Image 1 (cartoon, rainbow, N blue to C red):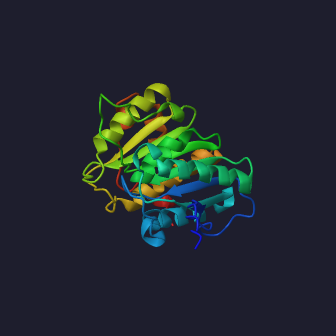
Image 2: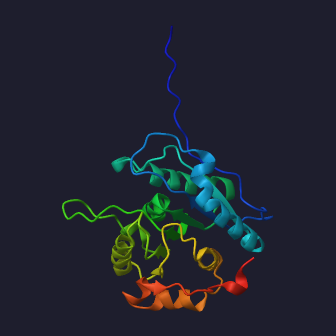
Image 3: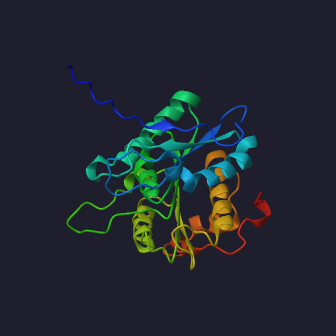
Length: 253
C-alpha cells in the first residue's frame, strides 16, 4: 500500500471581524498567544479568544476609515526556537493582505507570544505599525543574540504591559523597548499598574488605547495626548508611561 504524504500545514486568515468596510484602506492583523514549544495545531476558538473581542471593537470603530480586522490562525501552537513559526505566519498574513487588498498599511497586533511575533515580523514591507500587548519575550542571555529590533525602524511601535504580570515579564518588554527606542524614535510603552497578564482590570482603557493607536498609525488621525506625549518623551519616561484609569472613556462603545 502506498504511503500518503503528510499534508503541509498552512496558516490562514480568519473571516473579517465585525462589519466589513465598503473599501479597505488599512488592515489590523490579530496575533493570538501561543506556547514556547509545541508542534500541535492550535485550537481555533480557544487560541483566538484573547484577541477577537478587541478585533471586533476595532472593526466597528474603524469601519468608516476603511479598517478590516482579521485573526491570524497559526500552523503550530509553538514558537519553536529558531523556526519562529508564529513570526513566519505573521509575515505570511501580511503577504496575504497585500494579495487581497493591495497596497494598504498593516498593523500587527499581538498578545502574549503573538506580541513577540508582531515585533519580530514588523519589518515586513506592508507593516507600518506594531502593537504588542503583554508580549512574551525570552530571557536576556549575553551568550545568545538578543531579540532583534532593527526591523522596527520606520514603524510606529506601542507596547502595553501590566506591572503585576506573572506570566510574561514586564521588565523584559521594557528592555526591548529601550533598545528599539535607540534605533527608532517612534517607540513607546505603557504600563498598566497593578494589573496582571490578561489586563482585565483596565480592559476598557487598554482597548481604547489600542483603538487610538491603530487609527492614528493606519489612517493618520491625531493621537490622544497621552500617546503623543509617550512617543515624544525621552527614555525612560516614554517607556514607562502609566495608563490612566478612564483613558478613552468618551470613545468607548
